[in-house]
View 1 (cartoon, rainbow, N blue to C red):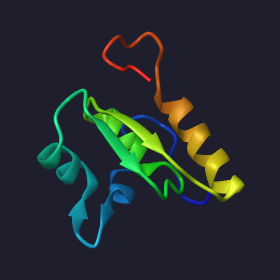
View 2 (view 1 turned 180 degrees about the vertical axis):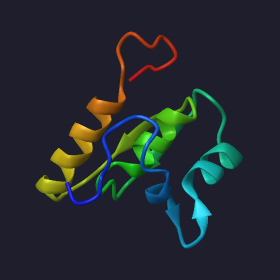
View 3 (view 1 turned 90 degrees about the vertical axis):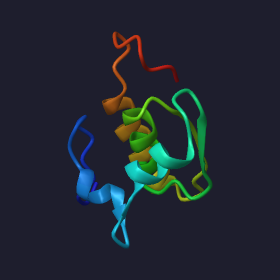
View 4 (view 1 turned 45 degrees about the vertical axis):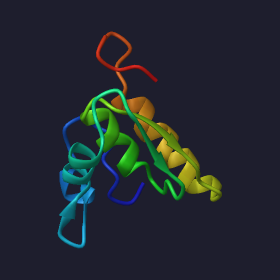
Amino acid sequence: MGGVSPVRGEGYAEMRQGGVSLLYLILTYSNPGDVVLDTTMGSGTTAVAALETGRRFIGFETDERYFEAANSRVKSYYHPLDSNQNL
């Protein structure tokens, strides 16, 4: 997956774009339980950041390779036994 870390708690460097943390943006402009929309999902970094901060997400990706990478990454992150996460 070319540097994409599907393991929970890893990959925070990927959640930074232009010096601005996706975690910061999500925490600042949304509330726990809100839905984060990503219309160019790529490898799923925003989806994981949303889950990390107690948000839900909707993501769109037209490239099948990126879609599969994002799908795998989110599934690897999501733990069904964790009652705080709702997909």
